[in-house]
Length: 279
Image 1 (cartoon, one colour):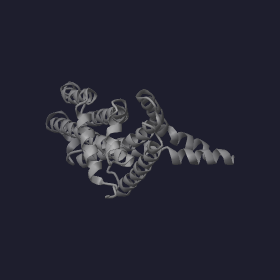
Image 2: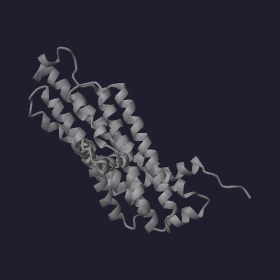
Image 3: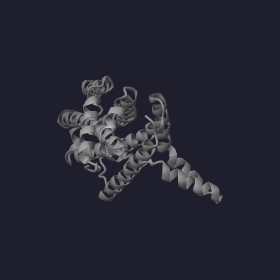
Image 4: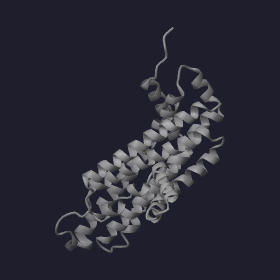
């Protein structure tokens, strides 16, 4: 009898099916409509005509949309796609075949991560096109004196921002996968994942406030908090990009390495938890 071994090919099949299922969901279509709405809203900005500062306003508006809807998509899509397999009993059929539970988890993760990449890429391209269009209009008529040194928007950094946010969404996908691996309901997974998202955005405040305390138990608690929950403020480079500041290479490399570590850790935790779960 041939021994069944861990197979990237089976992970690839699960990831493709997960991605196709996610694209067909009405929720994803709803977010796509919102993205198209951002394109249509570009007509409104023509009425402002307040010069170069308008570009920062548009960039901040676009960055906020990417972060908000990307975070919602990462949590809701991960939980929904995971529990659809459990509730429809298809997980039993899949795992009855020579497929490891680790392959199931990794396949689901890569499928959702690909969905997040498509969504983030689409939103980033829309924002870049909108910024280029408005910058050209301002250069030619509204405020040409502000562009004597050339274009102000660093479009390479706009796409770098999109990549950084996709990495953050992938971590959030991994977090939701861990929660879903032991949760009994889709709703509980979504709510708890949003709570963790809030903690990840605010944990730096607790760390900065309590790290100065000399009480050892508090210092230990702060250390554990910073280690368990990723610091999502590290991915907040939107202000620098909107102001036209270049992002240092060492910062980019540090963010990528930081994200990859947490992605691997959370997926391994999800695998460990899911192996103990009865389906």
